[in-house]
Length: 214
Image (cartoon, rainbow, N blue to C red):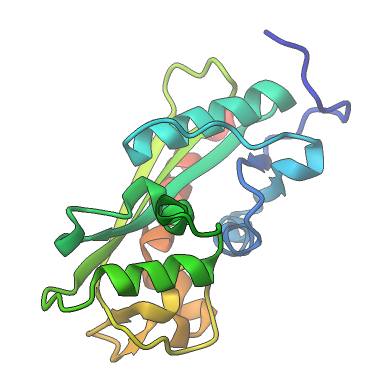
């Protein structure tokens, strides 16, 4: 195995490297996993660069990112690959959700991605969509049995953004059952019912069952 980047002692089983530098994800992960005493450390704090995400599925990308972070830190690592899948766009933006606008020559930003999505759906009556999150936890880089958890959250895309909470496509992702967009939900409510929240709860159950590995 290559030499790790981190020179700090290995964790006591409660520290997990988050294979992301997304502040929104770090807050969501910490809020849920923190209830069981797990502490998330963003990979950037340990000098880990972003991993390549060359695959066409959420699962393959999440596994690649988790192994990358674990390899370079010598620690347990958790990665997610998540995004928005829109029925009328054949599942796009999918794994390209964070870089969707770049496909049309735009910048990598939430605002650009949302603007591109709205343009792509102009005149389209079918607005059904779903958020998908796939989480992968590895106890070490060669973990032969990673923990995989998945969650999905159904909704619709609206042209006009509403709400100031959340991130990504949240202002345009309308939840009929709630009567509001995700960005209008309180963070606590989002964490309970979101795709990532569902996956995190399943992951937390699995982590507790595998106490010796974490």
